[in-house]
Image (tube, rainbow, N blue to C red; front, side, top):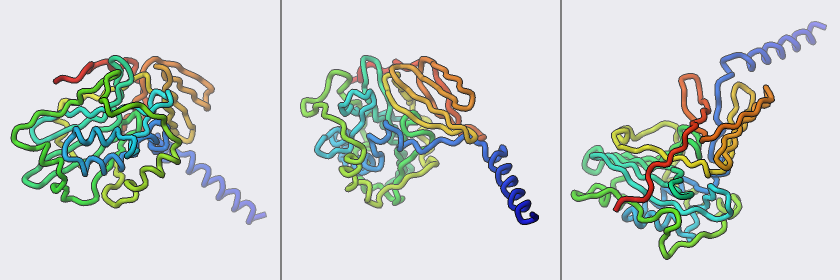
Length: 290
């Protein structure tokens, strides 16, 4: 009986450790497995940015169906969304916003490309996934430190420079673009494998660009986004679904369901990651300035 008692005691100790507060921190499942993030691989986006001569060319390649990097369908209508490029600047820092117009005064920021110039031929850059789409602290960063040969940096930091603002908005698109049907995620990954198998960029979870905080950028979130993410809190999984302008929260532990008008926002706290609901939707930033 002694061996059996020892085994039971060991199992009890293991169970106690797993259920202790040390293991009960909030954990966000990697967001690129979410429906929305599956439609835009940020490593492939980074490759397009690296090769572009300016932001106009970058916007065109980003939305080119022949290239196939964009497979976003945020409003779930079956068609790929147009991604416009909007830039904010302050001194030697740039924030390039990848933004989807989903309706009149309805915008969803998908990611930001953040660049800072530290000196002659010395640049830092990263792509930050939007929290709503990719979860908190999801970055794409170059493997090589020396990125100054990229042609787009010479264009962005030329002596006379005005931030790039896409000319397009909801209902008004370039004549070379038309919506096409979104494909299954497996087909999409096959299309982008020529970008994602390169060793140019890697995924990171800490920022490497710091001075972009000086840039006057305010993220946009739209209640027209339809997506699903999963958040595990202390071993109890909670599912949050954004659909038709509402946030429906179901807690299997308590059986309670809560519906709030607004958008979900994932934030980082001292003790882990938590999910909150921002009840007021953002409708700022109508049409681009010329």
